[in-house]
Structures are given as C-alpha cells and as structure tokens.
Amino acid sequence: MATSPTKPKKPEAERWEDLAEEVLKGIKDLKNPKSLRHYSIRKLVKHTQALGEYLAENDVKTNQLRKFLDAVNRIKADLRQESSVRLDKIEVELQVLKPKLAYAVGRSNKQREKPALDAFSQVINAAIDSIKDAELIRTESDKEEFREDFERLVYLIESVVAYHKAAGGKNQ
Image (cartoon, rainbow, N blue to C red; front, side, top):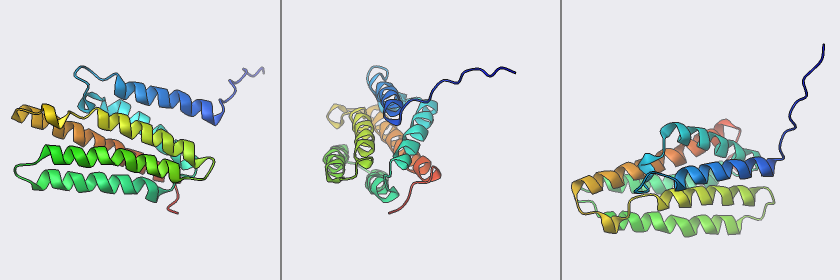
C-alpha cells in the first residue's frame, strides 16, 4: 500500500508569519469606515486561537497577557459605570496600552518569547487603531459604535488569553 507524501511542516517562524499576516490583514482590511466591530467573530475566534497557541508555544506567560486583559477590563468597568461616559478619557487609556505593550516587548530577554510578544503587540495595536476615534463621536449612534468596537477588543484579548491557557500557557 503506497503512502501519499506528506507536506513538510513549515518552520514555526514561517507558520506564525503567515498567521500574523492573516490576522493583521483581517483587522486592517475591515469595512470602511475601518471599525473593529466589523471583524467577523468567526475570524476573530480562529485567529485568536492560533495566536494564543503560538504565544503558549513560545513561552509567553499568562500573567503577561492578563496585565493587558486586566487593563482593558478596568476600562470596560469605567465605560459601564459612567452615565455620561467621557469617551476621550477612555480613548486615552486605550492609546496608553500601546507603549505598555512596547515596554513588555522591549523588556523581554527570552529568545522565543520576544517575537511572540511582538506579534501580540502588533495585533492589539492594530485592533486599538480600528476602534472609532473619540474625536469623531457626535451622536448616540457614534457612541454605540465606539462601544461595539471596544467590546470586540475585549473579546479579542479574552480569547487570546483563554486559548493561550488551553494550549498549556504557564503562569510564571
């Protein structure tokens, strides 16, 4: 019985580069106006599963990811508590996550972990950039769109953390 030749597995770096391109393209090619709420939930789940697994395979610790999820959850709580929410304040808090991500990448001194954290940073930065700009919010509809974009960011980070943990990601 003849066996069919199997396709050789791509090296890890190439596999991730392909996925990273797909994830970033998925976020950057959102419908016009570019808005995270247009990121298909099916694609989000597929992409975050692969990203979470990649992060676990490359020794990124759960607590490193949880820091960003916790920060986003604090913003989420602010967004829910305030009756007259100051979206400009929320946007500042979101934008400040970017340098925190850059710091986490720069601080990493592990050969496998650093590129994985950089990939996570690129995805989160692209997602944050796809949230409706607070300066453009004029109507209640605009506010609702901002909230929907933000909620999709929360789903994205929660999913990455969940899949990372499911793939065996360690706490420390």
